[in-house]
View (cartoon, rainbow, N blue to C red):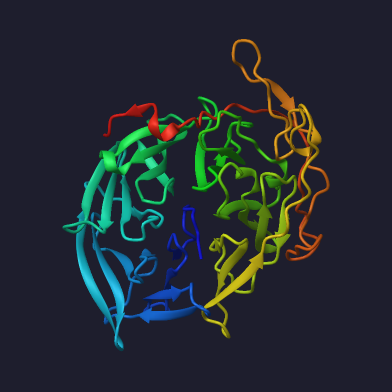
Length: 423
């Protein structure tokens, strides 16, 4: 099982980067304990890791590749302790790692699981700086890795070794921009993503194999975020697919199917869709011009899941009958290849991008042109086609084409250029 992406973990449920283990808080209020899920066997199963004292509600947990579970406990407003929990006979073993004391009150946030499965990192965001900590996997307990300018959030891994980390950073009152932090160079920071100078641009997911990046930005309409995609190392514009713009539902990407080199358009994206009718799963590829909908399993731990290399989306769920379940959802077959020929892009339109929107040409002076998208074609609402959501009547549509400005995304070898000193 492979999950070669890293993004923000679902609240209360974290999965290792290789998809082997997960961790969550189990039990009832007043008697909460860490619970480890094993996901890579013939059948998933849960192992409770209770201690003599219960865990506090909301205690952050993170599984490691060796099956141990990292627990972060808040002692007071400034001090946090870290321990590794593991099953030992009939009980639970605990290995204290040490403590982190932050300079000012505020949350110490665990980052998504590192791709190496050994180390774990956390950030503390102050008024003007963000401190990055190695809280597990170090030599002598928690270690301060770097102090970064600005207020950083998010966290997406850009390689398999746990060296290159993308964070969303705000400097002063400026817009949010994604930067890359090189952990082997003492936290050296590189600009990664900027669609326009004024836009708020955040990286949500990244696929190491294909270079696909899933973004959230307000570049087309300031103050209104939209989902977009780009390719690491490419100078082509970001694309804002109309089919991912749902007026009456929130759309949140949570997993990428591991792709192939040079084929980012064929990388599958799994999305959580939340509307008045409930939550369900969306499936989309950059090469397609529609969003497919699928009903989530009953008891789905919404927003969590992993995608295997062979195109199966695994969704963890909990019910009274199945306290540790893993549903499988196969990715639909790719649509027929678009017409080819001189000047024909995806969708058969001259200059059209794979999502059906027109890719702007640069005008004299280097300014990108303003273009009108041709629309998304027939929409696939919940309950239509082979992928069924909660049923008709949700009012979820795919939208129509509209005038928009697409700006180039300077992703050309970004982790290795435009460096700035750490701190």
